[in-house]
Length: 575
Image (tube, one colour):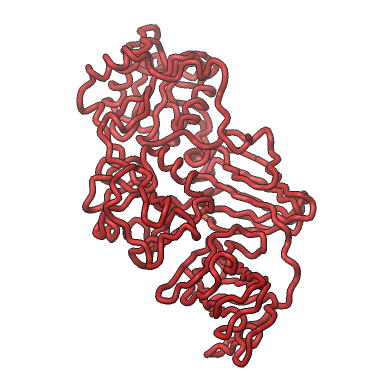
C-alpha cells in the first residue's frame, strides 16, 4: 500500500541494532552523566507529552482525525493508550492540555452499565452526560471541552482530536532497542557498512540523522560507544559543501555543516593533517589510529562504505511514510496519504505528484487534519489539469476541507532547503454529488422568523422539503409539536463560518425509537460520514455532536406508522 511506510530491504536492515553483549557492557561502563536520559523537560515524559497535576502519567493531545481503533494504535506506538480518567480533579487538570478540543478518550462500553478503559485501569470514574452511555450513538466516547462530561461516540467514526496517556519514563525507557540515551537524545552505532548518503537515509528512516557532535563530552561518549561496539571508523553527519542553512541568508558558501542542520560550533579534527577536503567531503569519527587518534575526526570520501552512528531525540518513532516521493502515486476511492517523512522529517528538493481518484460520477472530499510545511508548497488541482490550482497551501494551514467538481484531484508537493515542520496528512473520500437546491436565506434581523415549511403553527406537516441553512439556527421537525409526517425523508444542509466547526444540540427528542430517527452527518453531502443518530425520547438534557468542518447535514427519517411529537435542535458555529 503506497500510503504505508515501505520497509527497506537488503543489507541496510540486515543489522540495525547494537551488538547486544557489547551494548550491555558499554552501558554498564559508561559514566552516569553520559547515559542519563531526559525524554522531555516536562517531568520525564515521552517527547511531546506533558505531566498533569495529580498524576505521575503523561498526556498528549493529537489533532489528527482518527477512529477509535486507529487512535488507540497511534497512542500505543507512543507506549501508551487512549486516555483514561480516574477522578473529577484529574479531568479538570486536563484543561490546559485539551484547550477547546473535544478529544476521543479510551472508554468503551459493551452495555450501558458495563464500560472499561483501553489501558486496563479500574473503571473508578465516569461522567457521562445524562441519558448516556447509549450504544445507539456508539460504544466509545469523547470528552467535551466545555464541561466535564463524556459523550457517546461511534467507534468507527473518525473524530478530529484524541487524547493519549502514557507512563512517565525511566532512563531505560527513553530510547528504543539498539539505542543508548545521551542527554536528551538517543544514539546507535550501526555495524552495517553504508555510504554516507545511504547511512543518512537509514537514520532518517528511524526518525533521526547521522550524529552531530557539539562538545568534548559528547565526542568522548561517542568514541567510547564506538570502541565498545565495532572498534572501526564510522560515518557521522559532517559534510563540506553548500550549507543548507546558508540559503536562509541567500548567500550559500562552501563550509562544514551537520546533516541535522544543527550549528557547527565544535570540532575535533586530527590535526595537522585534517581537515583536508582532498581526502573527501564527508567526516568520520575515528575508532582506529589509521588517520589519527581514536575519537578524532578526519575527512573521507562520501562513497566509502563503513559503519555509521545515528542520533535522534528521545521518544521519536520512525516516520509513517518513506522519505522519497511514492512510486505508486495513484490512490483510489478513499484513504490517507502522508507526505514523505511524516511527521518528523521533510526532505528538501522534493517534487511529488499524487492523484486521488473516485468512481466516475463522484466527487472527492479532501481534508488536511495536519499541515505543517513552512517554506513548502502544496498545490491542489480540480482534476488532471496543471493549469490554475484550486488552492495553494503552505505554513500551518490545517483542518481545511476541499471538494472537487470531478472524480480526480491532483496534488503537487514541493519542498526547498527552507522547508520545515511535520509535513502533511490528507484524508479523502469519494461521494455522490449533492443535487442543486434552492437556498433559503437566513434573515439578519433578530429574532429569526421561521419559514412555515420548517415550523408549522396550525397543523401537522405532510411534507418536508430539503433545506439549506446557515449556522446559529434552530431546526424543528416538521409538524412540531403536533406530530411529524409518516414516511418522512427530510434533509437539512447547514453551513457555518469558514474555518469553524459546528455543534449540534438536541434539546428535545420524541420519536419512535429505532425506526424514526435523525442522522447527523459530518459534511455537506448526503453521503458524508454519519457521526451520530438520535431516536426515542430525551427531554431533560442536551444530546450534542461536534463536526470536524463547517458543514453538517441532518437527515430525518420516519416509517409508515404514527410517530411521536418530533424533535428540536440548534446548530451553532463552534470555535
